[in-house]
Image (cartoon, rainbow, N blue to C red; front, side):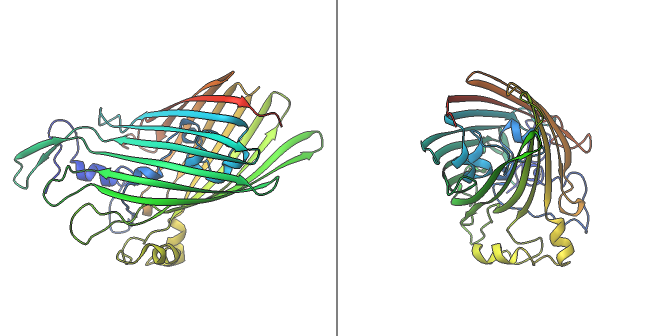
Length: 371
């Protein structure tokens, strides 16, 4: 079966879908050992704030999108309720009908705990399917969506834990031939530490975060025995906030990510628990290649009077594991209960399919809690 793009897409769909997350458009060759998984959209930053900070988010201050980055941060939310709606036209340089939409929110249920829920919807646009001879079959609108729940609880004044659950639906081919929609479920486990410091006359905050996301059953798209791993991901990071004066503060954030799935060329038939543990040592070139599988996200956020924000960041992936590296930037504003964030991605090359990616997030915060 061939997924042909016809006049509606500028690239064959099967190639487009499998490569645009990994950056393999940038280079190909024997030395490239890109790791691929099912539902790669789960690894994409859905909100404009973290997207503008190079996709860093596991340890930055909690907000309505915390459920995606680290459910443990829900224990430290500062409002009674928060809601955010994010939207991004996807691959807008080469396709005009793909988009990513994300709705999330939380509700405090005690002074030390909060629940959160979210929905992610990925619309891949209209695709003209053809058979092996190039004859048109039908037009299909592939889509993927998830429903997510999470809870975070403070264990002390500085430490919290969080857990999340996720239902995943991926319908790429409308049941053509022996294909079928894929369904799975997954869980997240997070930890968060935050500590306020006073050095001299200035106040600081140091935070650490860790999250293992998308721990779940493999997903199948055919009636055959083949199943693909979800993008189980380990994210560790830190954020350091400097309160320069009552009106100005700056946060520096750094995240490291590693997929806990088999490396390229490793055994893809093993179980999910075994794959998680062996993923730290299954690369064919040993520890040096394992280090190449770690992506780095660095971000800087400046706030003036908690009203205006300016952000910048950088994302880096090894050339041998996909070669994604790009600069990001964005702005944010808050007025009373409302806010808006915008992010813009500047890729490493003009022909990168992620060039000129924009993300928009609308924010509503309700009933700030007095500390």
